[in-house]
Image 1 (spheres, one colour):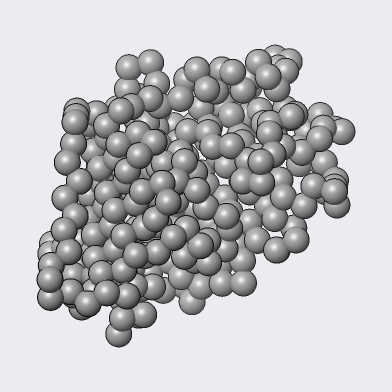
Image 2 (tube, rainbow, N blue to C red):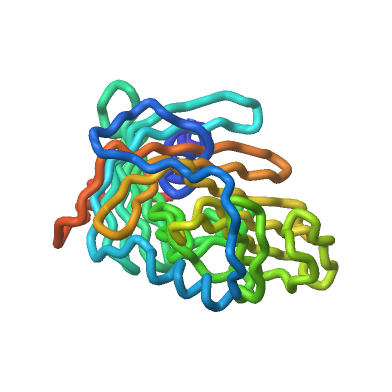
Length: 279
């Protein structure tokens, strides 16, 4: 029961608030902005384009959000949740997971070096380091990566790789850690000396609309897409996040934010009742 709950309920919902694939159940009254049609792209250097991406990132100190989540496992079985989230930039992510019955079944507090989980149904408290998430996602994971995926921002290369090239794939540019040989990323032959490649698809508003991490050595790929945004001042917050994990056990995770705000400071309630067992 314990393993089934964690893998089928809490962790999929938790990951879906980090990553995604296809969802449109919650609606928001805010105006949203979809990705653009094909355009003629001007010549861009990688450093110049990367600077624009960082300049237009979604910036915050505090963030509160609510989202609908859908998780599809390797057997194509689906589970849906509501997730309430609080975030302190570069510091904490707090999640409360609620199924359709409206009763909290799990809570998480994610710090820069650990993940704390409360299983409300079975009165269990679990503490893990990031190797726990890496085993689940089948890719390397860091706190800044989780935070960036949730907010549609850039995160540095998993293996320390830096952006060194820009390709064209109309209507997008692609910033990549792969050395450039061709003008178009789709025609680039894979380089055995660069088994791990990270690409970012950038639209004409300097937004990241897709991130893809390919690890040829481990035969796994993580793709995160942002098909729709909500404008906020001069920046954009991702309304929908979609993710595909291609590995030995593929899965799809999707979230749609129904609301968010940047008021703060926030509290992150997480206390462990004495009756809870520890795992």
